[in-house]
Amino acid sequence: MIRVTETISIDEGELEESFVRASGPGGQNVNKLATAVQLRFDVERSPSLSEDVRARLKRLAGRRLTRDGVLVITAQRFRTQERNRSDALARLVQLIRDAAVPPKPRKATRPPRAAKKRRLESKRKRGVIKALRHARAEAD
Image (cartoon, rainbow, N blue to C red; front, side, top):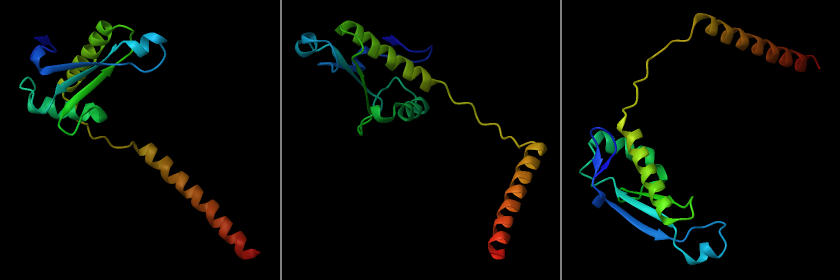
């Protein structure tokens, strides 16, 4: 079991890893070895996540989420499989931790009176400038 938060733990059986060749610099090593890892986690069917965490995780995942609801994290920062595996797992855990925290509700605020006054004054000045342009065009 992978401990994400106090209340969320993920079974390692829910994760699927596949190794692919990494892109970028690395010489012959990059052409011979499959050091990059693709970590797949089925967000849609995971029994470890509550509905609200699942919804927030889908929103946070963005383009990393497939149509089937599978989160795909590709890690190729390091030259070894093991470090890329731990990097991908750490990124997944952080993403779930971020999704586990509900967003703070927005507190409605009103603009101060001085800000309203400044805005209206700048609109008035702009209107005067445009009116002068119009008056000048008629005089020509």
